[in-house]
Length: 572
Image (spheres, rainbow, N blue to C red):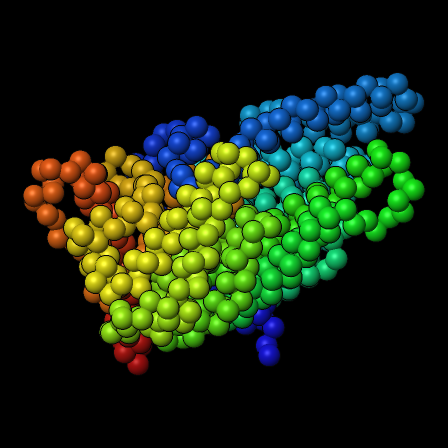
């Protein structure tokens, strides 16, 4: 079999042709679109995923806390150097320069990359952590397409040479701490994807194979399991933005790869947790109680880290499945996946893994291409669905919806039960032909059904444009974009059409999914329906703009070809 990272690689010219996209006009972008507060408030998440929402919304604060806490240590480094001989003056000057760059609001991306290329005798590991945190903050706060436009022709312009230097730092593997690796990796992924039209050339087969090796190699002090989860999320984000709207060749191999990772880490996490809770120990019982407590705490940390890898792989699977067109090929893939996903879902020991696997199942039922006839007489089995043993999978989610445990906090229990209930409702709706068709057609009844299986929300781009998030398809994609750009996602969506296109659903078998009939009666009676119609109209305007731009590009290309042909004839 051809390795997944080899099938992923395209030529530079193919990337360039594929990713020539127009960008939003600057007047559509609010003047303060790069601010953290606006970016966060305008990029809502589903209510049943508050755990992930809190993590991403607090990214900005985490970076600020890191900078504030460690700047004191940088100051200490400076004081220590001043107490040493005059031979250390160069080191003291370097520390002072790094501190000024970290604190200064005028520090540029290129200045930070230049500092990172210096030896550690001049830029310490501590300083590198701070510089990388600042670099990531700069990249996601203002889209590179906007930043480079403002700095065209100046020393601050971020060109391919600067990105290559940052990539070389990453692939050299000289990082020394988990924090240094994390912000270096996130900076590399975000800087490439923030300007994918110009920087897609860096996504080579060698780079992707390097990421694969980091995931499958044994965990280390710097590449911990927590960081492996981040590597998976970054890999999926690269695949999503590069392959969206183009060929899905090789995507199925990556889905299977992630499935294997999810299975392995899920089994490992569950078994280790059972072992610790049962009182089994790998170490001698002669250890004192404090030492035993420490080892147990470490074991639970290992469980938590393995859970993060499994859930990242599962959420990554869901995202990659959205890149495969609906039809017989996707049906075959998801039918085989269901045999592996059901045992992972049916897991009382770890609800985080079960919840992530459940979301993949919900996406599968939403994306599956059903036959014309449903066997409504037989509720136990259903051959016209992704999973034949229908009653079994329904009962699993029913049990998880009502599951109670003293080990789970009341708030978490409510959140878990809500997720599983929503997933169960999704499955029940999509195996019903009448309900399924009403959703596809976006009829008033279908709109009402959507509100029962999804906590629909939207991302406001400008006064007249917004992106609705009202399907598992869009939710899976939004989740990975949130990892990549965090508190700066709104700014990226406003300024970069390539990113924005990832949150537009393809047309269904009933035509454009944005075409729907407005029920005048509901419009005058139901406020929720009024809000939904407004969101759908905003969404339609975005898609119409996209089609109009594509038409213009096509006409220009045809005119250029005609002109070149005329010139060729003239030369003859």
